[in-house]
Length: 326
Image (cartoon, rainbow, N blue to C red):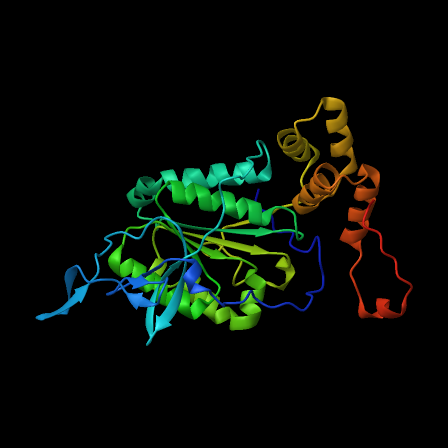
């Protein structure tokens, strides 16, 4: 499953930046100390208990939460240099499990890792592991990450979105101070873009940092593995480097069979027509044909053109070519 052949696709890094760190706080829940913030109106909730931040000093506070609810979070500043864990809503309820796929094997290995905490302790080895998933855009990396998120949440873990290294390092310290034994997943989506924006040193500080040395799973994704330095891709940072390729014939068959509920003859037509289609393209074909009533062959042709054609400003002077697959 591990691969060192990182040069087999992509030789140029297109210009791109990390995802925005802008957060709309009213859409989520912020877990903060010593106050619980009422996100709906920006004011503190009614105090119900006392907290003692320093010996002999007692402050009123809303009802405290002894354990962070198992979910996905960002660590954000909310006012006057106060920081807290912002709950991020990610829909992981409708994920389709694909048996005998690379994703299925990865999930099995992660489950083995989660189940063997006592074995790591017995051999005096830190319960820590790193997985880096690489592959072309749309190959299923995000779907796999969402399946991992669901697995960890179901087992009472916490997922931290690492889109700002400085903030996440503070968050790890904060979480470890309150819950030293909580299992954590640190998620570095588009890690190449994070390094480009914040620098390699900042990412390495998290991967090796004292705040998360035990009971942690580091997950990274990238479309451009060739730009990552070997200091990132090495054991005890990212131990497993796994290519997530286009959905195989068997995976596409399983996907369409569960989604479309069609007979074998029509199923074969869909599977054969979608060779080297991404999951996103498979979903779009289903929507175009089944939901919008477009012609199957034309929709397939349109999607293939869309996947290989990159819009360019030089097209402005070319004749219009508007084909949406009817």
